[in-house]
Image 1 (cartoon, helix red, strand yellow):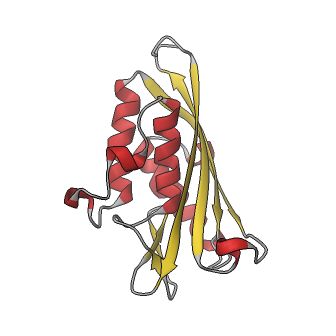
Image 2 (spheres, helix red, strand yellow):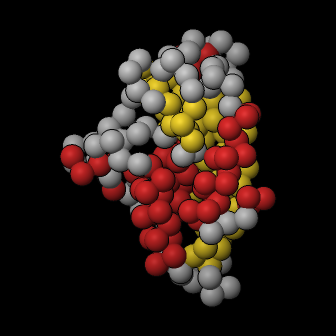
Amino acid sequence: MADQKYRIGLGYDIHELVEGRDLVIGGVKIPYEKGLLGHSDADVLVHAIIDGLLGALAMDDIGTLFPDTDDRFKGADSIALLKKVYDKVQAEGYWISNIDTNIIAQEPKMMAYIPKMKSIIASILGLDETDISIKAKTKEHLDAVGQKLAIEAHAIVLLENIGG
């Protein structure tokens, strides 16, 4: 695999919004009356990035690598999981060229939190913030996301061979 100059990966995640949980997206705790349900902190943005990285490497997905049946990952900080996956990227001889993402949520509004999300993710991945795009979208009140029952995220990552 390390002889390939570029590899691209697509990531996706969705979690249900429920009462009694913190809302953590992109490593940022966002004030809201509900949070995302999941075995870990349910950070949909970071989970989508993780799956994009793993997909680019043709490895297992996040659920296989960090299964919800393993108590070691109960309540896990997704930023810590991202760091573990980034270590795998580097071990395979790649670095991240750029990441493009969408957070899809009817509520809460995300724009005010995006700079902090970019800062956190960039610091973990050794990237410049200009190498990360985080866009906030809604579902125009359609489907579960549009009805404020869930939040989803998409990510595309481009890896480049360190050796050139």
